[in-house]
Image 1: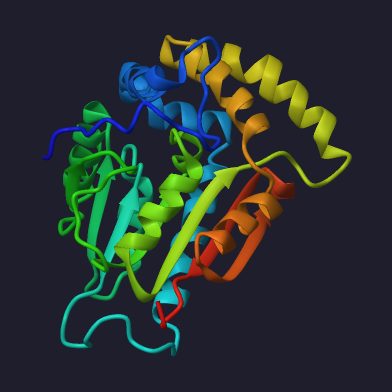
Image 2: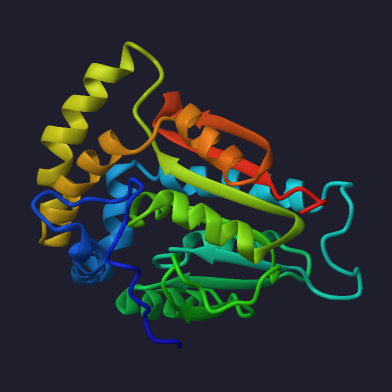
Length: 269
Protein backbone atom coordinates (compact mmCIF):
# COMPACT_ATOMS: atom_id res chain seq x y z
CA UNK A 1 0.00 0.00 0.00
CA UNK A 2 1.20 3.49 -0.72
CA UNK A 3 1.49 5.92 2.13
CA UNK A 4 -1.10 8.65 2.51
CA UNK A 5 -0.39 11.96 0.81
CA UNK A 6 -1.66 15.06 2.53
CA UNK A 7 -3.51 17.60 0.36
CA UNK A 8 -2.40 21.20 0.22
CA UNK A 9 -3.19 23.27 3.29
CA UNK A 10 -4.64 25.96 1.05
CA UNK A 11 -8.15 25.15 -0.16
CA UNK A 12 -9.79 28.07 -1.94
CA UNK A 13 -12.80 26.09 -3.18
CA UNK A 14 -15.48 24.55 -0.96
CA UNK A 15 -14.73 21.19 0.59
CA UNK A 16 -15.30 19.29 3.79
CA UNK A 17 -15.19 21.48 6.89
CA UNK A 18 -15.77 19.61 10.19
CA UNK A 19 -17.12 22.09 12.70
CA UNK A 20 -14.42 23.76 14.76
CA UNK A 21 -11.57 22.19 12.76
CA UNK A 22 -9.17 24.44 10.76
CA UNK A 23 -9.26 23.82 7.02
CA UNK A 24 -5.65 22.63 6.99
CA UNK A 25 -6.44 19.98 9.61
CA UNK A 26 -9.72 18.75 8.06
CA UNK A 27 -8.29 15.79 6.05
CA UNK A 28 -6.34 14.49 9.04
CA UNK A 29 -9.38 14.89 11.29
CA UNK A 30 -11.69 13.06 8.87
CA UNK A 31 -9.22 10.21 8.40
CA UNK A 32 -8.84 9.70 12.16
CA UNK A 33 -12.61 9.94 12.68
CA UNK A 34 -13.34 7.17 10.18
CA UNK A 35 -10.44 5.10 11.47
CA UNK A 36 -12.04 5.05 14.91
CA UNK A 37 -15.33 3.63 13.65
CA UNK A 38 -13.99 1.36 10.89
CA UNK A 39 -14.78 -1.92 12.66
CA UNK A 40 -18.47 -1.00 13.02
CA UNK A 41 -18.84 1.17 9.93
CA UNK A 42 -20.68 -1.40 7.80
CA UNK A 43 -23.08 -2.32 10.56
CA UNK A 44 -23.94 1.33 11.15
CA UNK A 45 -24.46 2.03 7.45
CA UNK A 46 -26.82 -0.90 6.97
CA UNK A 47 -28.79 -0.35 10.17
CA UNK A 48 -29.16 3.40 9.80
CA UNK A 49 -30.26 3.17 6.17
CA UNK A 50 -32.30 -0.02 6.64
CA UNK A 51 -29.86 -1.53 4.11
CA UNK A 52 -31.02 0.83 1.35
CA UNK A 53 -27.36 1.85 0.97
CA UNK A 54 -26.73 -1.57 -0.63
CA UNK A 55 -29.32 -0.75 -3.28
CA UNK A 56 -27.79 2.69 -3.96
CA UNK A 57 -24.36 1.16 -4.56
CA UNK A 58 -25.84 -1.52 -6.81
CA UNK A 59 -27.52 1.16 -8.89
CA UNK A 60 -24.25 3.10 -9.12
CA UNK A 61 -22.31 0.01 -10.23
CA UNK A 62 -24.96 -0.88 -12.81
CA UNK A 63 -25.04 2.66 -14.21
CA UNK A 64 -21.26 2.81 -14.50
CA UNK A 65 -21.21 -0.58 -16.24
CA UNK A 66 -23.77 0.59 -18.81
CA UNK A 67 -21.85 3.79 -19.49
CA UNK A 68 -18.49 2.07 -19.71
CA UNK A 69 -19.74 -0.66 -22.01
CA UNK A 70 -21.95 1.63 -24.13
CA UNK A 71 -21.15 1.93 -27.84
CA UNK A 72 -18.94 4.98 -27.43
CA UNK A 73 -15.48 5.26 -29.00
CA UNK A 74 -13.24 2.83 -27.11
CA UNK A 75 -11.35 4.41 -24.26
CA UNK A 76 -8.75 1.68 -24.31
CA UNK A 77 -7.56 -0.85 -26.88
CA UNK A 78 -9.94 -3.79 -26.74
CA UNK A 79 -7.20 -6.31 -26.08
CA UNK A 80 -6.34 -4.62 -22.78
CA UNK A 81 -8.31 -4.61 -19.52
CA UNK A 82 -10.30 -1.54 -18.55
CA UNK A 83 -9.10 0.10 -15.33
CA UNK A 84 -11.82 1.18 -12.89
CA UNK A 85 -10.95 3.19 -9.76
CA UNK A 86 -13.20 3.29 -6.70
CA UNK A 87 -11.98 6.32 -4.77
CA UNK A 88 -12.69 6.88 -1.06
CA UNK A 89 -13.72 3.23 -1.13
CA UNK A 90 -14.07 2.77 2.63
CA UNK A 91 -14.66 -0.89 3.42
CA UNK A 92 -14.98 -1.75 -0.25
CA UNK A 93 -18.70 -2.32 -0.84
CA UNK A 94 -18.76 -0.42 -4.13
CA UNK A 95 -15.38 -1.86 -5.16
CA UNK A 96 -16.74 -5.38 -4.81
CA UNK A 97 -19.98 -4.46 -6.57
CA UNK A 98 -17.92 -3.15 -9.49
CA UNK A 99 -15.76 -6.26 -9.46
CA UNK A 100 -18.87 -8.45 -9.64
CA UNK A 101 -20.26 -6.54 -12.62
CA UNK A 102 -17.04 -5.93 -14.51
CA UNK A 103 -16.15 -7.99 -17.53
CA UNK A 104 -12.49 -8.53 -16.93
CA UNK A 105 -12.03 -5.06 -15.45
CA UNK A 106 -9.01 -4.13 -13.39
CA UNK A 107 -10.72 -2.76 -10.27
CA UNK A 108 -8.74 -0.73 -7.72
CA UNK A 109 -10.22 0.40 -4.41
CA UNK A 110 -8.43 3.39 -2.89
CA UNK A 111 -8.86 5.15 0.46
CA UNK A 112 -6.68 7.19 2.78
CA UNK A 113 -7.91 5.44 5.96
CA UNK A 114 -5.71 2.43 6.64
CA UNK A 115 -8.22 0.72 8.92
CA UNK A 116 -10.93 0.85 6.25
CA UNK A 117 -8.68 -0.73 3.64
CA UNK A 118 -7.75 -3.60 5.94
CA UNK A 119 -11.45 -4.35 6.38
CA UNK A 120 -12.08 -4.04 2.64
CA UNK A 121 -9.41 -6.61 1.88
CA UNK A 122 -10.70 -8.95 4.60
CA UNK A 123 -14.24 -8.61 3.24
CA UNK A 124 -13.08 -9.52 -0.26
CA UNK A 125 -11.27 -12.58 1.10
CA UNK A 126 -14.29 -13.63 3.16
CA UNK A 127 -16.57 -13.39 0.11
CA UNK A 128 -13.96 -15.06 -2.07
CA UNK A 129 -14.03 -12.09 -4.43
CA UNK A 130 -10.46 -12.03 -5.61
CA UNK A 131 -9.14 -9.69 -8.25
CA UNK A 132 -9.49 -6.24 -6.68
CA UNK A 133 -6.38 -4.26 -5.79
CA UNK A 134 -6.27 -2.04 -2.71
CA UNK A 135 -4.37 1.22 -2.54
CA UNK A 136 -3.81 3.57 0.40
CA UNK A 137 -3.72 7.03 -1.15
CA UNK A 138 -5.31 10.46 -1.06
CA UNK A 139 -8.01 11.02 -3.70
CA UNK A 140 -6.79 14.60 -4.10
CA UNK A 141 -3.35 13.43 -5.29
CA UNK A 142 -3.40 9.96 -6.77
CA UNK A 143 -0.21 8.13 -7.79
CA UNK A 144 -1.33 7.46 -11.36
CA UNK A 145 -0.24 8.96 -14.66
CA UNK A 146 -2.51 11.12 -16.80
CA UNK A 147 -5.11 9.21 -18.84
CA UNK A 148 -4.64 6.04 -16.77
CA UNK A 149 -8.27 5.20 -15.84
CA UNK A 150 -11.24 4.20 -17.95
CA UNK A 151 -13.73 4.89 -15.14
CA UNK A 152 -13.77 6.50 -11.70
CA UNK A 153 -16.45 5.89 -9.10
CA UNK A 154 -16.91 7.12 -5.56
CA UNK A 155 -19.73 6.42 -3.11
CA UNK A 156 -20.34 8.72 -0.14
CA UNK A 157 -16.70 9.76 -0.03
CA UNK A 158 -16.48 12.71 -2.40
CA UNK A 159 -18.29 14.86 0.18
CA UNK A 160 -15.38 14.31 2.60
CA UNK A 161 -12.71 15.76 0.31
CA UNK A 162 -11.00 19.02 1.22
CA UNK A 163 -11.57 20.73 -2.15
CA UNK A 164 -14.31 19.51 -4.48
CA UNK A 165 -13.25 21.41 -7.58
CA UNK A 166 -9.62 20.35 -7.19
CA UNK A 167 -10.82 16.76 -6.84
CA UNK A 168 -12.83 17.01 -10.07
CA UNK A 169 -9.73 18.34 -11.82
CA UNK A 170 -7.75 15.36 -10.51
CA UNK A 171 -10.43 12.93 -11.74
CA UNK A 172 -10.43 14.62 -15.16
CA UNK A 173 -6.64 14.29 -15.32
CA UNK A 174 -6.77 10.57 -14.61
CA UNK A 175 -9.53 9.64 -17.05
CA UNK A 176 -8.79 8.66 -20.61
CA UNK A 177 -10.75 10.48 -23.33
CA UNK A 178 -14.20 8.91 -23.33
CA UNK A 179 -13.76 7.77 -19.72
CA UNK A 180 -16.65 7.73 -17.26
CA UNK A 181 -17.14 9.33 -13.82
CA UNK A 182 -19.81 8.29 -11.27
CA UNK A 183 -20.29 10.13 -7.95
CA UNK A 184 -22.87 8.76 -5.50
CA UNK A 185 -23.55 11.15 -2.63
CA UNK A 186 -26.06 12.07 0.02
CA UNK A 187 -28.30 15.05 -0.62
CA UNK A 188 -31.24 16.77 1.00
CA UNK A 189 -34.58 15.25 -0.06
CA UNK A 190 -36.31 16.59 -3.15
CA UNK A 191 -39.77 15.53 -1.93
CA UNK A 192 -41.32 18.36 0.16
CA UNK A 193 -43.16 16.04 2.56
CA UNK A 194 -40.03 14.03 3.22
CA UNK A 195 -37.89 17.06 4.10
CA UNK A 196 -39.04 17.77 7.69
CA UNK A 197 -39.06 14.08 8.67
CA UNK A 198 -35.64 13.54 7.13
CA UNK A 199 -34.21 16.62 8.87
CA UNK A 200 -35.54 15.43 12.23
CA UNK A 201 -34.08 11.95 11.79
CA UNK A 202 -30.81 13.15 10.30
CA UNK A 203 -30.02 15.81 12.90
CA UNK A 204 -31.64 14.38 16.03
CA UNK A 205 -31.89 10.59 15.79
CA UNK A 206 -28.98 9.56 13.55
CA UNK A 207 -26.17 10.99 15.76
CA UNK A 208 -27.54 9.15 18.79
CA UNK A 209 -28.04 5.86 16.95
CA UNK A 210 -24.73 6.11 15.13
CA UNK A 211 -22.93 6.84 18.38
CA UNK A 212 -24.59 3.87 20.06
CA UNK A 213 -23.69 1.46 17.23
CA UNK A 214 -20.11 2.59 16.70
CA UNK A 215 -19.16 4.03 20.08
CA UNK A 216 -18.48 7.46 18.56
CA UNK A 217 -21.15 10.06 17.77
CA UNK A 218 -18.74 12.51 16.10
CA UNK A 219 -19.01 11.02 12.57
CA UNK A 220 -22.81 11.08 12.80
CA UNK A 221 -22.89 14.70 13.89
CA UNK A 222 -20.46 15.50 11.09
CA UNK A 223 -22.56 13.64 8.48
CA UNK A 224 -25.72 15.81 8.52
CA UNK A 225 -23.68 19.01 8.71
CA UNK A 226 -21.56 17.97 5.75
CA UNK A 227 -24.64 17.05 3.69
CA UNK A 228 -26.24 20.42 4.45
CA UNK A 229 -23.14 22.23 3.17
CA UNK A 230 -22.65 19.97 0.15
CA UNK A 231 -23.54 21.48 -3.27
CA UNK A 232 -26.99 20.73 -4.64
CA UNK A 233 -27.20 18.37 -7.63
CA UNK A 234 -27.48 21.27 -10.13
CA UNK A 235 -24.50 23.01 -8.49
CA UNK A 236 -22.33 19.90 -8.67
CA UNK A 237 -23.43 19.36 -12.28
CA UNK A 238 -22.28 22.90 -13.07
CA UNK A 239 -18.89 22.23 -11.45
CA UNK A 240 -18.54 19.05 -13.51
CA UNK A 241 -19.17 21.07 -16.66
CA UNK A 242 -16.63 23.70 -15.60
CA UNK A 243 -14.10 20.92 -15.00
CA UNK A 244 -14.50 19.86 -18.64
CA UNK A 245 -16.89 16.93 -18.37
CA UNK A 246 -19.73 16.31 -20.81
CA UNK A 247 -22.86 14.14 -20.87
CA UNK A 248 -23.57 15.18 -17.28
CA UNK A 249 -26.64 13.69 -15.60
CA UNK A 250 -27.86 13.24 -12.06
CA UNK A 251 -30.42 10.77 -10.79
CA UNK A 252 -32.13 10.97 -7.42
CA UNK A 253 -32.79 7.84 -5.34
CA UNK A 254 -35.21 7.34 -2.44
CA UNK A 255 -36.84 10.73 -2.63
CA UNK A 256 -33.55 12.51 -3.25
CA UNK A 257 -31.75 11.24 -0.14
CA UNK A 258 -28.99 9.95 -2.42
CA UNK A 259 -28.02 11.27 -5.85
CA UNK A 260 -25.92 9.62 -8.55
CA UNK A 261 -23.99 12.00 -10.80
CA UNK A 262 -22.53 10.60 -14.02
CA UNK A 263 -20.38 12.30 -16.64
CA UNK A 264 -17.96 11.49 -19.42
CA UNK A 265 -14.62 13.00 -20.37
CA UNK A 266 -14.95 14.20 -23.97
CA UNK A 267 -13.16 12.06 -26.54
CA UNK A 268 -11.48 15.19 -27.95
CA UNK A 269 -9.79 15.96 -24.61
